Image 1 (cartoon, rainbow, N blue to C red):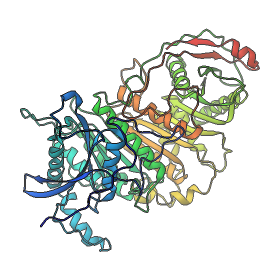
Image 2 (image 1 turned 90 degrees about the vertical axis):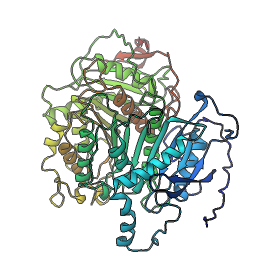
Image 3 (image 1 turned 45 degrees about the vertical axis):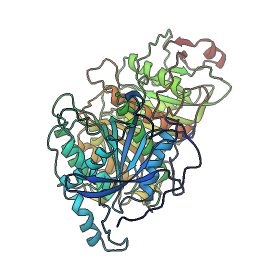
Image 4 (image 1 turned 120 degrees about the horizontal axis):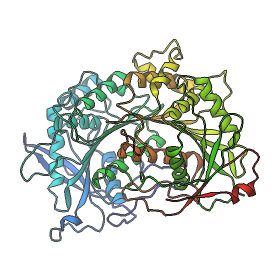
Length: 606
C-alpha cells in the first residue's frame, strides 16, 4: 500500500508566472530558510530501467493552468530538477523546488533517488550503516545516473515544460550524482525525436573522491560546481581529479563550458539551512551563481546578461600629470554629486596601453555608481612584489585625497599583470609585519598571473600545514587563524583553467587559508589569460560576463548600492536593462580643485 503524505501548505504570497525574484539592493540574501512554505503536489513516477517506483515533489508557478489545452512551445516553461542529499527527499528539497517555481517562474521538481519503498537507516545510525546505504548510488555511477534520468524524463514529459530547458541541481549526495551524470551522460546521445538530456547542471557541496570514475566521452553539458574551502569532502586531490576529468572531456571543440567556485572557511552542507554547517552568505552567493547560471543556459547565451560584456567606446582628452610614483585617471559615475562621498575602485592595469582598462574602468563606474581610478601601476617585472606594492600603495594614497571619494571604502581590481599585483597586495594583508590598509575592502584578481603568485607564496605556509594536499591545508585551522588579524578584505580570484595550473591553485589556496583570508576563487574552463579583454585571442564572453557579475555583487556587498549606478543585482532570470547614459572621465593631476575636476570631465560614450 502506498504511503499517505499530506499536501503542503500553499505559499501565502502570490507570484505570477515568470515573476521577478527579489534580492536586497545592498547585499545578496538567501532565497529561503527553515520556515519557507512549500506549494506543490507529490507525484509518482517510475524508473523504467528497473521498474522502481519513485515519488517526487512537483511545484509549478501560480497562475499556470495545467488542465488547459497544450500550450504553444513559446509558452512552455523551463524546469529545474532538485536532487536530494543522503537523508532522502524531504522538506529542504521541497522548499528549494517551491522557491524555484514561486520566485523564479520555473517548474521545480524535487526528485527521488532511493525509491518509494526504500527504508532509510535511522539518522543516528553509525556512518558505516548510512554510508553503505548511500554507497549503493554514490559508488554506482550507472544506477545513480539512471535514477536521475528517470526524474528528467518525467519532467520533460510534462505538457507545460520546455523539454529543451530542463536544469539539474544536486546538494551533497545529489551533487555527487550530478558529477556522475555529467561523466556518464555528458556526451549528447543522438536519437531521433528526443530532446537534449538537460540544458545545464549544478553540483553544490558534493562528496568527491580522488579515485572516482571519469567521463565516458566528450562532456557536452554546461556545468557549475559550488564548494566550500574548508570542506574535507572536496579536498585538493579530489578537486584536482574533478578538473582533470572535466578537462579530459573538453578535448574536442565546441563542448560546453564549466565553472567551479570555492568559498573560504565554508564547510560541507553550507547551503542547507537545517544543517549545523549552514552559512547564510555562502548560501546567498552560491544561489545567485546557480540561478544566474540557469538563466544563461535557458536563454541560450550562457551569460547572466547579454549586454553586460559589450565593449563601450571611450574617448578621452586629458593631460597626463605625474604624482609621486604612478599617474591616474578618474571616472565619475553619471550625475555624481561631488558633495557626497562615494566608494572608489582602483583599477590595476595589465600593460601601459590604457585602451582596455580605460573601457573597463568607465563601465565599472557606470554599472556600480562608484568612482573608478585607473592607476599607472604597471611594472615590467611581474615577479617584483615590492615594486607592485609600492605602486599600489601610492595609488591608494592618491585617491584618498580626491574630493568626493569615501576614503574608507576602496576596492582594488587588477587585470593580468595588475591581477598579479592585486594578489601580492592581498597576500601582504595577512602578514603581521606589514601595516595593512584597512580602507581596502575588496581585492579582485582577474586573470592574474597566478604562477608568479604561487612562487611568491612558497615557504609562507605554516609548518603545521602542508601545500601538498591534505585536508588540514585546505581549512583545518582556518577559523582560528582568521581571528588573529581583524583586517580581512574580501578577496576575489578569477582564474582561467588553461592559464593557471591546479598545483599553483592549491599552493595559493593553502597559503590564503593559513593567513585566515576571506576569499572566493572561481575557475573558468577552456579559458586562458586575458579572458575579459575584448579583441584578445583568449577573450571568452561567458567567463567575462560571469566574472563581472561576481565582482559587482561583491562590491555591492562591501559598499552598498549607489543610486547613480545601474542595478547592482540584475535579476538572474531576466536581462539587465540597457543604458545609453554617458559616464565621465578625466585625468586628475595632483592638487586639482573640486571645481576644476567637475568642470574638466570628458564624456565617455556608451
